[in-house]
Image (tube, rainbow, N blue to C red; front, side, top):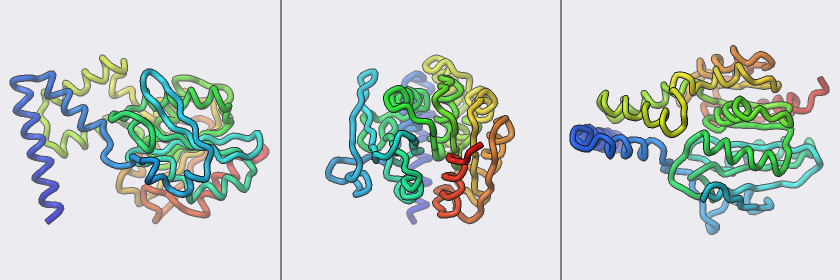
Length: 282
């Protein structure tokens, strides 16, 4: 029954947007983009803050009229920055955190735009990357770890900003081709060609990006930082082939195939491999 209701709801929304595109095309495109970019999960309040985040030192930054939250578990001068994905928040790292803390490092996690305690309703990768850059400039992390769209944001960040203080990056379950994500959304709502074209134009005008170039594989090809890419064969959210695309173009990277972890990729053995990769001597 829930699946039927969800199907009817999504198709009804799509039908309305398609109708609107014939009379108010700009408004229809804006609505389609708003629905696409607004997460429906992952927000937090001070009253609902998970215990793992309550144990951290918190700090709020402001940037271009937006605010975003960071959480720090203090250690030594080695700094690791954690970047979560879509409809999540900094608490998603709770299971990995003990393994990283065993290295003695200072761990910093960030809430992305419109997630956790950060402000806003819209999530987009360029804005997320600008948040990351502020944190990098402030705390000088040597290591970046990103999951899902957070992983793709890390790729975009390092490709765009080319920060030499970042020595190693870990990308878990990240998508490569943005066009696939957008196409899945368009198919879900059965949006017409006018809306599809309008969304492509929106990205070009607002982010100066052609969708075919908004690719994790392309970003990775420009990165000289040493990388580890891990992807699960049973990932139903981001297909395994996406991780292989990223790894294939990243010159100085290793690829780990996991199985049975799904998209979350929570696994003790994987955490050990990530820690070993970050702190290996060569």
